[in-house]
Length: 119
Image (cartoon, rainbow, N blue to C red):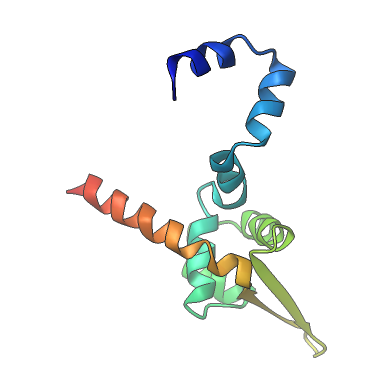
């Protein structure tokens, strides 16, 4: 970022700052996939772990409430789809959408960078 751009950003009001960063591509990406669990959830679904109970067991440290919230957000952002089967008891399966598939090159780049930091 250029110095004059940083100076302009520092002079923005809170409202102007929010407006400026709402159009930032990195912010948009992080709003969709940021946080502790979304990348893990997306990866598990891609691996075929596509039912709520299986997801919860495959991520033992996530709470039921957080998993529910994160799945809803991923569905709202159209990164996953949710299919409800008319059975008793009801069965729900999650799958990666076409838009969600586009996230995986980003996650792979993040994994490569993270791996380089662990060494």
